[in-house]
Image 1 (cartoon, each protein chain N blue to C red):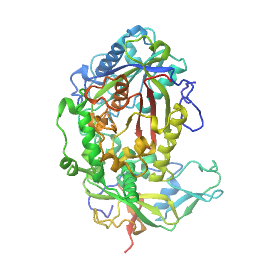
Image 2 (cartoon, chains in turn brown, orange; image 1 turned 135 degrees about the vertical axis):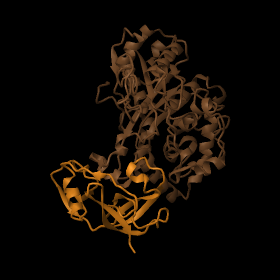
Image 3 (cartoon, rainbow over the protein chains, first blue to last red; image 1 turned 45 degrees about the vertical axis):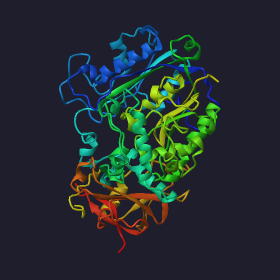
Length: 431
Length: 142
């Protein structure tokens, strides 16, 4: 049963998911996407974009507002700052709620939703949140859940307005990281693990170029993505290899670009999904993991074991195996950790240390190994939802020019990092 | 201040758990939690041993301050204000010789950015932060 503290499927030995094939995604909506909010146009604020995405998802499912009885979202919008001390606006934009996040209560009020019986505004980031939504519907806490995930980027250079980075003191756990310039686990720890990976397997940073270029290519086929809309040109290998260095060897093209946007999804029961507008995309399983290394920096061995454990949980819960996953969309927020997912799940037979060689093969959507057909977050901007949206579109057969030519009956998507993530297995069929 | 030109390290703020550690640093000693039941070191400090689950067997144990460079990168575009005027600056992971499962962060004072000898031995030093609190650092053994 879902409860505030015990809804996760985060350990091995839980068996096949009790709601396997009994929950489905039937709607998806994506808002406008821009680099930053301009601080003026309220319809493109966090709240405005959230309303847009939610209404699109409800329409996509062919539902009415009265059909929604569950609201699920996350406050983890990565705004990294508050709107305050800048002056607020007239209601409903008169607090942070609506400007740097959009709570379930805010959306309930703004959309006039009358039949909501389950509200959750404190879900984790989107990887685990998608599992939470599936579990909530499966457990009967609601029948039709509206689930949304905004990403917020305000004025100013990203990260430089984060109070932690301007403080002269380092409290709590940061006392053991900030004095040496450590900024975030996703960036720093995953880069040191990547360097260990290169040492162990004789690889180098250049081996990520093929992945980067293909992600941009796929992203340019994602019409609502940042690059397709605002910078519609393909990167070259030279661009990547000479990219601005952030933390050597990490270059700017290894990093997904913060954007301002929102995506929404509709989860419902498989029974209810049968007569809806869209072909249902069934959920076969979901899992979460959150591990920390033994010491200050997790190691390659620890990250590999974390992903391997996630894979074992996913095979156990879904009843599928490495050879059964047609579409695979793991997180690529820093390209330096994506190979851990590819190798840990052994997608298309890729083993430890083989990812760079795999990237150099044909990973185009038209080819035999359409890895990250979504374009990921490097190809569309850091919205994270694209991993799930593309998986759903591929199974529906509505991915347009990104539609893979291999079989697309199952899809595995998840984020964020190898040691902390949530994955969900989708299927065209309930069993 | 730091021996690295331009560097203003954010100062650690101790709490009940970490005060013995930071106090020892100010005495130029590196002490780690040691679970005497499991004979296992902990860094950063933990509330309890993750093997026996107890905090009752913790003691603070001084370690020798010898290690090796595991990996490194070079910070060229830091978001942390105190580091921006020191860029480029090394960022290395140091393993402790007494227990290589324990690792530390280091900017390797005295080693030019990008000229880091991976695998080389390092020794413990201490550097000053913005409040005067000392932090543990590592330098390549000459």
